[in-house]
Amino acid sequence: MLGILSAGIAPGLALLSYFYLKDEYEPEPIAFVLRTFLYGALLVFPIMFVQHVMDTEGIITSNLFDAFLSTSLLEEFFKWFVLFYAVYQHVEFDEPFDGIVYGVAVSLGFATIENIFYLIANGVEHAMTRALLPVSSHALFGVIMGFYLGKAKFTGGSKAKWILLSLSLPFVLHGSYDFILLSLEHWIYIICPFMIFLWWFGLTKVKKAKILSANHFKKQYSLQKTLHP
Image (cartoon, rainbow, N blue to C red):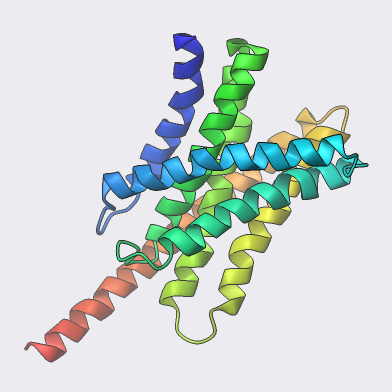
C-alpha cells in the first residue's frame, strides 16, 4: 500500500513543484497552495458520486456524452468553481502568473486522489502511464484555466471573455482527451501527438503569464515611483 500511495502522490507533487518554481516574482505561500491542492483533492468525492448516479440512471448513452458530460464538464466545472470562488478574490492572487499556480494546484489535487484510487484498483504497474497521461493532462488543463483567470483579474475592460475561456477551453481539451481514449481502438497513435500539443499549448501560456506578471510589477513600480518620488 505504501508503494501505491507513493506512486500515486509523486507525479502530482512533482508537477506542482515544477509549475510553482516557474513563478519568478512573488512565490505564493506554500500553505495556501497546499490548501488549494486539498480543495482539489476533496472534489473527487462529490464528482465520483454524481458520476455514479449518472451511470446508474443510464444518463450516459455514448462515448461522446461520457467524455464531455460525465467527465470533462463535471471535473472542469468543479475545479473552475473552486478557483473562481475560493481563490480568485483572495489577497494572495496578486499577479497574473498566480492563476497558473493555483489552477495547477487544484487540478493536481483532484488528479492525485483519482490516481491513488486507480492504482489501488488496477495495480501499481500502471503508475508510469498514469503519470504521463491523466496526471499530466490535468496539470495542463489547470495551467490553461489559471492563465485565463489571471488574464481576467489583471486585464482592464470586460473580463467576461477571459472568464468564459478559463472554463470552456479546459472543458473542450479535456473532453477531447477522454473521447480519444474511450472511442479509438488504437488511441495511442492519437493521444501522443495530442499530449505534445497540450504541453506546447500549456507552456506557451506559462511563458505569456510570466510576461504579464513582469509587466504588472513594472506598472506597480512606476506607480509607486510616481506617488513616492
